[in-house]
Image: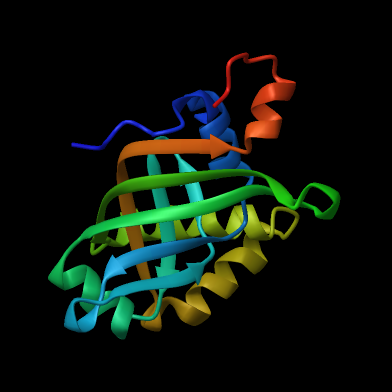
Length: 168
């Protein structure tokens, strides 16, 4: 279903894709938007065990798009080093593909939002974290993307540094 990467020698190993997804703090979620247009939105997330969690308002363009078509892709840039002298960028990026569902079960929703809170405020107390979550609970929507395919790519210059020969 997913085509082979044209420059497959630049493809990142699965472990590195997982690392980029785990360490990243934001990415771009792409959905099937209104009128057949793609809808891509920058968003915070947490990645764990093949799932990506997001928080959202309970209504809006993103939620309507997900209800209409749950298929999505999510892109994270792990490295973006502009090299002016070479007219290039030394990059590493990952794209995850999957389906999103809105978490309706209160226990699942709480577990997911706690993962997000721990990622972005790891040193906060459990009490403060719970208070912050409960202040927003009524107007909080939590989304879960089950990843079915991940691909990652790096700049050819980085691939060469790894010692992979015959790069086209």
